[in-house]
Length: 307
Image 1 (tube, rainbow, N blue to C red):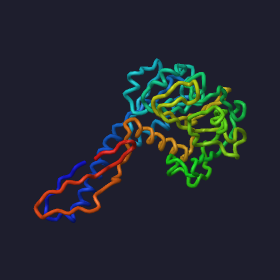
Image 2 (cartoon, rainbow, N blue to C red; image 1 turned 30 degrees about the vertical axis):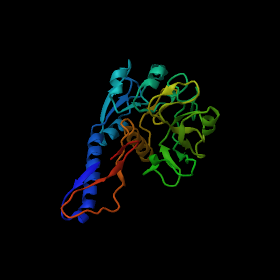
Image 3 (tube, helix red, strand yellow; image 1 turned 180 degrees about the vertical axis):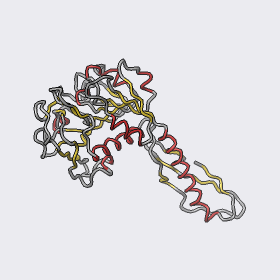
Image 4 (cartoon, helix red, strand yellow; image 1 turned 30 degrees about the horizontal axis):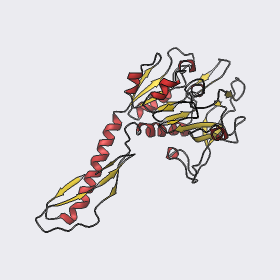
């Protein structure tokens, strides 16, 4: 970005100009964010009902939330900034992995049944377990543990959720989980990044991955097909096999924050835009009084650099 400077108090004006540029970028980013549209897929008439709590939380963040379902209009879905496959869905409607891979929009899947190999093909497994064999239990308040990066740091999705990898309460009373562990990611040569796993305090399933993210342009595992945009699995919402009771909004404040953080991350990916920061600025400029000076300010976002 080239700025033309021609004024007497040039020395005092440089930082003002830089501040103006940064504020202009931030204003543009905020404007884009306010217009983000989310397709929240849910099946009409499911006896356990929609995930109203999550929808309301998204709307409170200023997002536009549209609910729809199968048959999927792939062209229409491409027009959204994010597609969320809610827990209130039937996994049998998600068997067209080829079309889902080709959807060039970030997708977040909340339904463990939908990420399996016979469905959207993010996880090379076909087993979803329930903690008590399908019986509702009130003692299933449990915690999860963030999974550290290779350098012992933690993903930015945990900002405001937990500090230093400390375990945090994830669900209030009941969960079902994907019977898939960090070791399985390695064994299956998965390109996914495990982010959260059940803690040792879980009655069963300790170590099972409850959240993972896949970068675009890769196969989730060999033979799964290449997905062209980001994909995230986040286990929120549970049912019991007996069909007696359901709770689609059984999350805690911490897991809700985790959900909203990941939504914000994925929404920044479609257009490669993150809140900008000036990463390069002039260190020293000299000029004669009354003459012009041209200098470059470099502002960097996610994968984009503007001068």
